[in-house]
Image (cartoon, rainbow, N blue to C red; front, side, top):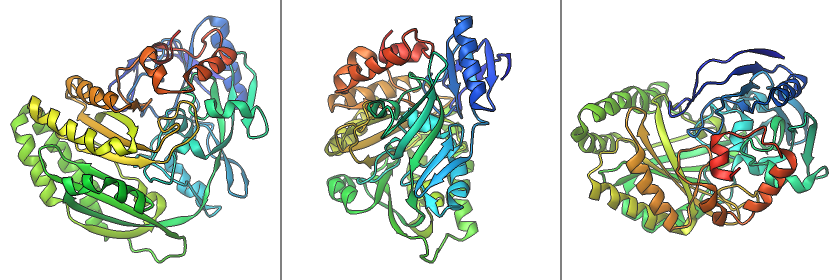
Amino acid sequence: MSIERGRRWRNWGRSQVSHPHWVSRASSVEDVIDTVTFARESGMPVKSIGAGHSFTSIAATDGVHLDVAALDGVLAVDGTSVTLGAGTNLYQLPALLGEHQLALENMGDIDRQTIAGAISTGTHGTGARFGGIATQVEALTMVTADGSLLHVSGTENSELLPAARVGLGALGVLVDVTLRCAPEFVLHAVERPEPLEAVLEAWDERAASVDHFEFYWFPHTTQALTKTNSRLPADTPRKPQHPVAAWIDDEFMPNGLYSVVCGLGVIAPTTTPPLNRLANRLAAEREITDSWHDVFTSPRRVRFREMEYALPAAAIPEALRAIRAAIDANGWRITFPVEVRIAAADDNWLSTAQGRATGYIAVHRYYREDPTEYFEAVEAIAREHGGRPHWGKMHFRTADDLRPAYPHFDDFLAVRDRLDPERLFANDYLERVLGQ
């Protein structure tokens, strides 16, 4: 175990800061056990940190930060089941899984997270027939508060799987995760601007008719940018975008130019509506066929803060119209687009898609802007529709009002009481959303 005095820690979105007393860098499972033991004997909480891509303080602590980045890579392969070190970043997976002609079944558009962080916060992609990454978890191993190793799978401590898959870091420190992977595939992607109202009116049909569907809406405009991805066999000829066009669409427009647009929005908010309308006009239709990872993910270099709410899938059109009305009524100038996605129901207790087909609405603000008023209004609208907040993204909910949203909330708390009765893995965020 390598342990040193802590220093200020910040997350990627610059929305959270903490000052851990100690930082431990684990290079083995034994190091994790030693760190948990050290924290317990020192009377300090311990939190595992991944890539810092959560916008909440879910990983913050003034106790011991445990860095598990060195616990990465493929540990075992059994058919389509792959065991990964908990610190493996999602961006490593194309190469790691590609050696075995495998792929993730689904993923979001950001790949900076660790696999442990992604499943613990309920990270997801889009697709009416596909769940979040946690639904692919077949087994996992964690170090619990007493320093012991706990294996959870379909045959060992199986009753804990629905809790441990989306565990919020409240049950223990993950050291490995076994995923059910898919045979490698490519995606045929079509992106095009369309009238927003037409997309909303056909939402149910559009979301159900293809493998992966999502759209972005720039506030102050009447257009949506739709993205439709269809899965094809791995040997399908690839037709990637020309490198220059890809650089313009994936790097220059959303990162270089957009950084300037966001900066202008801070100093001159009145420029935002015309710039958003210009962005809509510049959004060109494109069609490519490429690897699953290259299509699912996009570089995100402009820092932002995000709130995302999970709603019953059928509620998406009404909720988005209400958000649009709130933006207009309050005269807000919103530079970042609103993202809308879809996911299948699952049975993980704290999954935002637990028990229901789920649509997601994500709102963002440039990290130099105060998101509070906008996010509070969106949250109020989402709550009217039975919304559940993404655990890794900003929200204002507490245990008292989250309990009715999750049928198995108290079941999860019972597992927490069993595995961490002294709250070694607690922090302010978990106390807020789970209680003491």
